[in-house]
Every structure is written in C-alpha cells, then in structure tokens.
Image 1: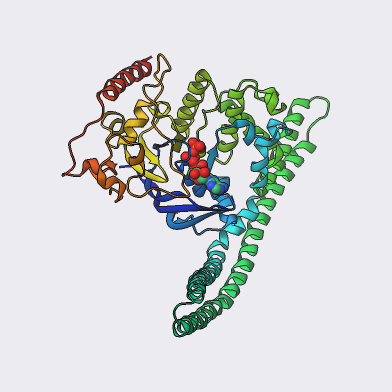
Image 2: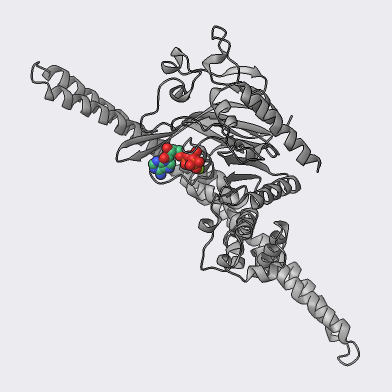
Length: 502
Ligand SMILES: Nc1ncnc2c1ncn2[C@@H]1O[C@H](COP(=O)(O)OP(=O)(O)OP(=O)(O)O)[C@@H](O)[C@H]1O
Ligand SMILES: [Mg+2]
C-alpha cells in the first residue's frame, strides 16, 4: 500500500466577516497517499479552495483555523509559521489556480516570472544554516505559540464572562449582585492563573535562546568550513587549468586553449552554484521546465509577456512556475475551468503526464465530476464545508451512495450533447448559517426526517468507500440511485474507456 504523505484531521475553518462567522470548512478528514490523484469535487462555495489554501498556508487574512490538524512530514501545518510555509512552498508544495492571467504578472516577462522564485529561494548556504538551527528555532517558536494560546483562551473566557455579566446587569427584575461578583471573582482567578502560566512558559525561553545562539554559532562555523573547502578545491582546479594553459602555443593550439578556458569558466560557475542558484542556472532550468510543459521554442517564449501567449499556453506557464519548486504535492484548483473544452483536455493530459514523470501526488479540485473521471484515483465529494462521500474513482462513479453525489453525477454535462441531465435544484446554503443535520437534505428529494435534525455519521460501504447519509442506516427505507444516473454513468464510462484505448 502506498505511503500516507498527508493527513488532514477534523479541519475546521471560518472567516470573520461583518455579518458574522462564515463556517467555510466544518471538520473534514482525509488522507493523501503518495503518487495518487485525489479529486475534491463539489459545487461553488463548498469549501474546496479554502481547505487547500490552508494546506498551502495562504488563507485570507480574515480566515481562522478553529480546529484540526494538517499533518505533513512530522509537522502540523496548522501550527507552523510563515517562514516555514515559505520554505514548504519553495520545495514541497505547488499550487495552480483557475485563472492563469491572475496568477501571472502582466508586466513581467515570462522568463523572469519563472526564474524569480528559484533565485529567491536559491541561497544554498543560507538555507543550509537555517536547516542546521531549525530544531532550536522551532523550540522557541513553540513556547511563544503556547503563550499566545494561553492568552487567546483567556481572552475568549473573559469575553464570555463579561457578556454574562452585562446580561445580568441588564436584568433589572432580579438582584444579581451576588452572581455578578462571583463571576468577577472567577475572572480575576482566571487572570492570575493565566499570568502565572505565561510566566512559567516564558521562563523556558531564556535557556532555549541560549541554546539557539550556541547552535547558530556552530552552524555558522560549519557552513563557513564547508564553503572554504569548496572554494579551496575549486581554486586548485582552476590553478591547474591555468598552468596547463600557460604551456600552450597561442598560434597552433587554439582549440585546446578554448577548451581549457571553457573548463575554467565552467568551474567558476560550478563554485557559484554551490553558494546559490545563479541566473544562468535558473534560466537553464526554466528552459527545461517550459519544454517539459509542452511549449515549443522556449527561448523565445521566455522573452515574451503573458498577453502574448494563448490561454492554454499561459496555463502551461503557470504549471511550469509551480514545477520550479520541484514539489512533491501539486494542488490544482480548477486549473481548466477558464479554458475551452479542447484546451481543457490538453491541460488535463499535461497534468497527468507530469504527475507520472515526476511521481507527484496531486490534489485536483473541480466542480465537474466529468473532468476527473480520467485522472482521479480517489474522489472526495464536498458539500457545505463537509466531505459527504469518498471512495475510489470506480466506487464513486459506479456505486455512489450519497444523494448529493447522485445530484452531481446527473448534473454532469453530457459528453456528446453537452447537455445536463438535470441541474441540482436550489442553491448551496449560506455558510453564515450552516444547516443542521445533513446540509443537502434541504435540496434533496430523498431527504428523511432525521436528516433535518441530526448529522449523519460516515457509513462504511467498503474499506475504501464511505458516505455520510442516513439512507445507509439499516432502518432507512431502501432507496437506490435514480436509474437515469445509472444509464448515464454506464454511457460515460464506456466513452472514457474508448478514449483511453485510443
Ligand atoms: N476571505 C473570505 N471571507 C469570507 N468568506 C470566505 C472567504 N473565502 C471564502 N469564503 C467563503 O467560504 C466558503 C467556501 O469557499 P471556497 O472558496 O472554498 O469554495 P469553493 O468550493 O472553492 O468554491 P468555488 O467552486 O466557487 O471555487 C464560501 O462560502 C465562501 O464564500
Ligand atoms: Mg474554489
């Protein structure tokens, strides 16, 4: 079985707005396995982008992760700082978005946009030092985080208590003085406790800072020694080449002279590359990557501006930029939605190709199940901030169990006529007021009474297939997916298989 590369647990995200809290993601769980393509499918507003933006550390400023974990490489990404996220985005996680034009800078040449991040993140010696002191730095940050958490908890409690007190004060009918003073006392005890807890934590910081400084000195020395060694080695090589050069006859041995001169300049460039990614190196890599994403004549393209390229080509450039980080995980957020159907198919094919060649793990977001039929290994269906069904591609297409998945399948545009069988009735809920129970019940012809009261748990259909629908309860009436969907899926799969054979 493939290795688990990421684990999302009970992830809960809300946005603070003037109207209140938008409950965008409400406790989602999923695993990501090495080398798979996981599709996240759902209508507009279901929380697909927000979930993945949290993974990338790029939530909007008013967004808060209320609960949950994103476990990746032994760390919980919900607790790491921007500097660490920056590093992850530079080396491990790539993301491409729906609209290529908004991901590109319109007034910067393509070449510079591709090389910029490589150059920015390419200080090898600096990165080496950072890695060496990482553990010590994180230890300090953890204490600081703990302090913040204690303060945040206290602030929340204080808010609650003060609210209670002002309610009691408003109530003129009864004498609440005793209650009020007991609440005030409670608050002051909380404050004393909070302060002493914070003090305890801060005490730990001093020795940690000391350890950090010591380690930092050590690291400086290590990096310096490494660099000096490399420099010495390289200088020796250049000296030897220069000596050889001296003995040559300028008239008769021009070819040898040229060759030696090239070797010298190559060696000098090699040494520069030990220190950092050089412009030349970045440019060479940009050309390779641009070729990899299927663009001809890369030298010419790198000198152009985004508006000089077609939409499809721009999306290829956006993919190229994501690849410069050499990511392990590539998140594609509706990367083909803004493109017409033919180009869409080409981009899907490209994503599939680079996934295979680079053994990437892919999260593919779309509102259209049809798009992922060919590329997803597993599918998670999202509705109103929750995952309502997940399973292998086969399971979700052939044996869907949640009425929302049925609705999505039947709203899929037909491959031949481009017609939709039926649109999903109604509109997704306003996430300022997420519905109780099964959020889809309000739009579903299969809703049961309990759907409006209690949230359905996940029912197991197979080891890999789960759905959160009361219809799967043993006492529920036997309802199967509408026959029209069955026919449609069969047609659809037949077409897909034919296409795959082509
Ligand atoms: N910065 C924000 N402030 C307030 N609400 C937000 C913010 N960003 C997203 N939301 C809300 O969070 C919910 C989930 O949004 P999200 O962008 O994840 O949807 P989505 O599934 O990606 O949909 P789409 O297919 O339209 O891209 C929506 O209700 C959206 O309005
Ligand atoms: Mg989105």
